[in-house]
Image 1 (spheres, rainbow, N blue to C red):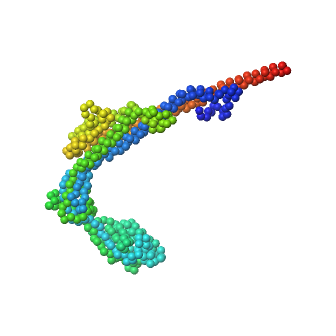
Image 2: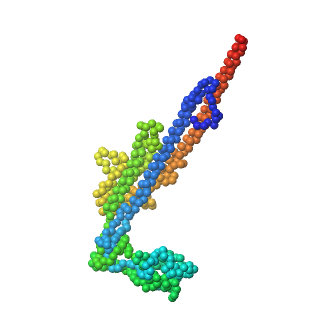
Image 3: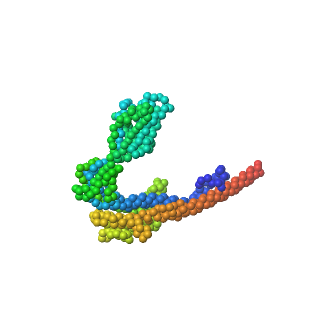
Length: 497
């Protein structure tokens, strides 16, 4: 045993008698410790159960996170938009986009107004200071110039001689002139670019004879070449020949038509066909992911319920993982979770729409005849042809079967129902927390056992001290008898002299 506060720190048993008192006490204490050992075993078992329950909780939370994304309409029944010429334009559709075929012709693209200045000194770089460009060293002097756009207020840019070209670019960006700047040092070109697309007039100015004007001249902005921006223009047709309408003065090269986002890439002389339809392949892949994830989760639970304990290893060779194997075998609480999950995928729903069960869209156990192995394990299989037929005929109701979340009428799709249940199982103070949480059944039992073990240990220490006290009394008696014997022997020896 560990240090015993009821014993002294120095023990020398058996000195008088020669009796191995320590070994005898140790053997007696092995018998006395059996209740404590049994309590420790119960405590360890509860601890392993708690750890496995936390693993179950994590596994179910992973399934919960998957279901959140899975049942989104855009993931479960996505649309695809196909452009007949992606060099001219590309298309992408949201889940609620209309199935449609239409044609677009790009007459112009949106572009910003750009002023290009030819820098007069090819040695100027982004890190060059304004002072070095202007040939001044006085860092107290301010260099000023203004940027304005037609119909807008003029914004003044103020620099010092220690500012660099990079600083100049940053100050133009932060001036609220709605203009950005770039410098191509490899080709000595300075650009002013309008932040908005469309035809705008950008101008720069500075006082005559000022350092600001010299800087503008050095950057070539006073004589720079201007490319006026433009708006995008797109014609829409439903037959690819006759325009039905024109979308004009578009500020961006993006337009949304019938729920389809069109990205304009280049001009076209002819109409480009856009086809929007259900992406059946992607829907099937998404449902396959659901089947795989569900089977992975239910198999994990099933295996825990039917896992055997490790019996072919000595206690000293057992790892924590070995001890946890089979710890929840045939556990009633875990069985409850298993049967709830299994019933949710095999049962019918009350959702609105054509499909009332997963079996109606090709998802079932796959068991036939007398073979019910998959059903017993809660596994599901996918009949891809039947699912494709359902998606082709009524994709909206396929989505409803999985994702309906009508709290008012208590109508829930299969995935939503599973998600709701898993949330109740894994949430704080939920089903698992009440079993294996800090204040759950297992946690309370562990605290009770810990208190019991503390009391047992105290009793054992007292019992050990009692045994040593009895043997000490025996030693004292032996010693006393020995002394008396020695006295008598000594007395007889003196009489015989």
